[in-house]
Length: 485
Image (cartoon, rainbow, N blue to C red; front, top):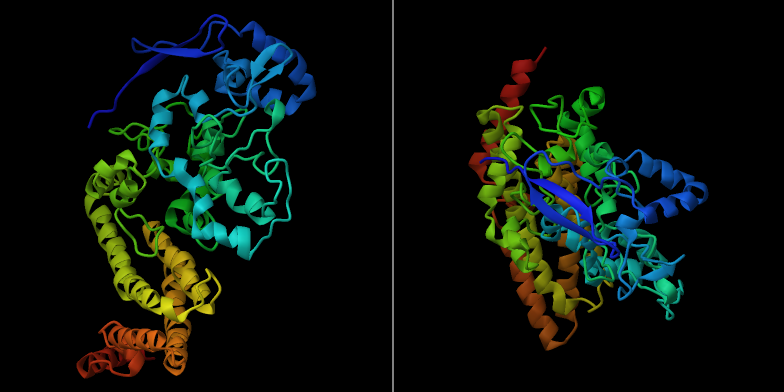
């Protein structure tokens, strides 16, 4: 697979403030011949009013390319968030559609990614937690006169993105801005925020490549990729050899410009000797470990109507293996995937699929209110917290997260919380006198017996196969004898 090489030439069209991109010969410089007069006027004021922003821009590649305030913030008078600013029409928000004036390929890739759709959590079960269970409608703004939950505004929306509401005069509602959530829903119809990773106004490439940037969102009890990375050999190497990482180099090809360690960007986005940079972070992922049961990424892409629906997981895995092989040999990489796939299969088959089946049968016996039953919380944390930690831990080679924070807690909560709570629902259902509930309780009870009678679970009933029990005892005795003093 040969890496595509594309050169771009950027020029300002007279009077409109729009940027046109034309493909030119290789090696063409990127940028404008000089700063525009309008940007110079912006600088005259903002270097005094906002010296920090001015200095950040001054250290950026944009500065060296003569791309300034107006080139990014220019707006058309018809834009919903446009306003007049000392005679110029601008907008506060710089959206992916704006960035596409110069970075069309990057924006197209990003628009096809799960990152750009992160704002769609606003209609999910997770958001019920923040808006209803954790919060109330106590935060009142012009955009939300009836109130909105401060828990959602300050929590979920800051990573996933808010739906920006524009007030009179181009002002932005304080419940929805400031917000750099990666799936922000913008008034121009675009989804996403480039400065979620490329922090304005310096847009440092070194910062975007650093694991801490991803750690703004990818951490915590349900998706601790940042902590997992730090525990892994990859993270240990990175932090001990950060001076060897060449993070600020324009060309950043693994195995060529650096080899001390990979970062999040290395594995999921950055160039290799045979692959271009990609802004679709799903193109090297062969399992989607977000839902209760892990699925292949093309299946989740299809559900969201993304172009990745046509890219099978085998192709994505080959893309990731191409990254791995810059530091590891084939046997190491192939064997890692055997280990990883086995953990996903264990989680899916032993806990996730039976758990989902049991919870579906339990619905008629519960209060029909999300998170209105103790068992709702037990099941949610089992897959959403412990289940994800185990799967992400295996994906990124962090054994403590795979085991103690993952499969151990899954098993503990499955056997000591979920199963007893299901049995309690059966008991109350049978005693209810309601024929429908009695029937539902019988179906659930039968499924509990079926699940616990499976080879994966019958140890819990004291029904381990005698031959297996004897083999385990022999292995334990042999181990003790081997190392006995």
